[in-house]
Length: 226
Length: 226
Image (cartoon, rainbow over all chains, first blue to last red; front, side):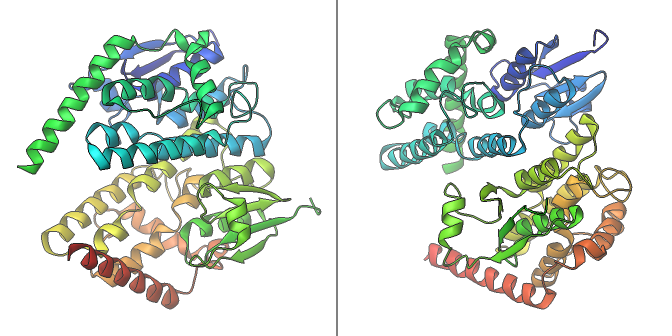
């Protein structure tokens, strides 16, 4: 294993690169992190992910793997120690189900709330909260697998941090103790886990990045409507 | 294994239920197929997939698994014989990558072509063809894994049949030998594989079903624009 060369092409503010880093950290795998300039993508990124031209890409001994959840499965299957998945196929399926649910239903609140006002914003917030409430129904305690962090937790672990940024920028409440007590507790704990915390991007810098992102969305929407 | 009780809740014209059936056939697993009335979903479906309320759902000894690709992974991990996935983690990741690509990029042509005309239709067809051409780049011969049918092939195996229905209904060409020779050949072979063919729905009935679906989309679009 000493001969393994592991590189991760990421972007500092990307939750998808972040969750791959968490998987590598949980496994204790050494890797070289390469931050991409997404406005001027490197030849290496274009070579290693010609289909999507997107980060994250894991390059293991010169062979690229793309798509964050596919990468995490690859990491867990390649290095057997410190398993991210449970062994039982039914438990594995459950973890995959919730990771997929989160990717499909609990990602859009940032885009959907950033551009809306009044009734439309209220509707978007209501939908986001309902989806987060459904996500909560998958928790079996602190984590989706009970007391141990697993695939679904690594997949959704970015949400608390970005939810709190969105709440601050838009001035809404997406997660609260009363409506989703379990998720709320989990969302407080996850970003504070040592193994995850050390790779979370700085809050102020990410907040500024998200504000700028919102501005560009608003400008694009304004340009499209004129 | 004789004690296993396997049920599949599906819908006769659903490609997503179909691919789960193919996985069960490849494995040689006996199962009871239950066709759902999607306009009047059964209490069993609502009980077993409360999150999405959608087919397919596999019920194995009373425990439900939802989401077609998650189900296929579950089937392959539960019954080890006749593997659908290769053993090598890198090859597995490649199969998952292409299955995901197909689900994200090669599903929308039916919706996008059914409602469009003129320049917009031309644009939708061009995009669909480019995505199918990209999909072709993943083929390593007849299949995504070379000479043996695997996860990605089972995942995309429904596309040829539905492409041909769309081509007939809309009067466009999505797949052709000249632009995508490998995919075109694979698309001719896959639906003719004995193990897959026996569960393909009747062409005429499915064509009528798709035409009706298009009519309902057009009516809905007309109602929305008045």
